[in-house]
Amino acid sequence: MPIDIAYADAPLGHQIRGVDLSRPLDDVTFAAIEQAYDHYGTIVIPDQKLTPEQQLAFSRRFGPLDRYVLERYNHRQWPEIFVISNIIGEDGEPIGMSDAGRYWHTDMWLTHNPPRGSFLYALEIPVRDGEPLGDTYFTSTGAAYDALPEELKARLDVSKAVFSKRKYLEFRARTNKDIDKPTGLASQQALKDLGDDDIIHNIIRRHPRTGRKCIYLCEGVIDRLVGWDKAESDAMIAFLERHVTSPRFVYRHRWRVGDLVMWDNCACLHKAIGDFELPLRRHMHRTTLANAGKAA
Image 1 (cartoon, rainbow, N blue to C red):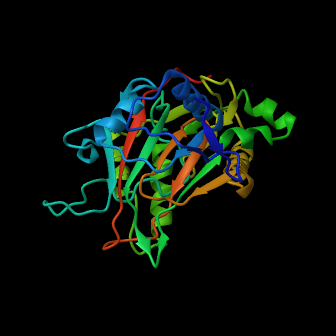
Image 2 (cartoon, helix red, strand yellow):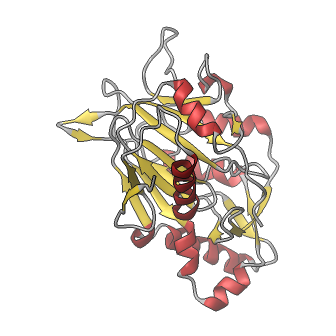
């Protein structure tokens, strides 16, 4: 059946309404959802009641799944589910990663073939005085590319960027100085354990399914543009970070229990907000789609 889309006031973040993902979808409905996901980069399917098995079954219709690299945060019974939570378990530790993604990023930028995307399902949401907390921002890297001047597009189209673990760790050390409770410590330790190798990506990636060109970057991660003068490279990286996160490209998601938010790692960046702490609880399950084919 045709899907009902409620469009957000942004290039992405549109809601698909009236579908029940706890049951197998017919092929036409599934194809329409996948087309919307590919085209917009971030879609929201609200009002779901999913078991882990049902979330996995829906996710696998898109293709093979990846497991999160830090095994301690994967679900013990369903390890293809990455748990995001600040709830304390019997061992005195959070049952999931409690402070993930609090900077503008695309998932697994440290790999040569990053995953296609992720689906995040909300089981518990922190609420204060009736207002949900822990919003997530998404920005359209495709719309940001489209808005660039043609001469700049032409130059960036053939440029590569050095994604640096060292630079990322230095960036997080600086930003963590300004807050009472440092964030992202688990993922930072994982990066340290993986060594110091840099990763080179095209700064403009062509989406492997739609062909759309998207700006590919992460806040505080790119060390330099290959072959560019250093001053010019630094200025361009700073410009692109500001440009991609301009309000005109951004959707802010206010979570509700039962939301399933699906994002594409080529077509968007995202950033989580950590404006809550216990006793306000957050509990989410994330599935991750394996790479759908190396983006050009």
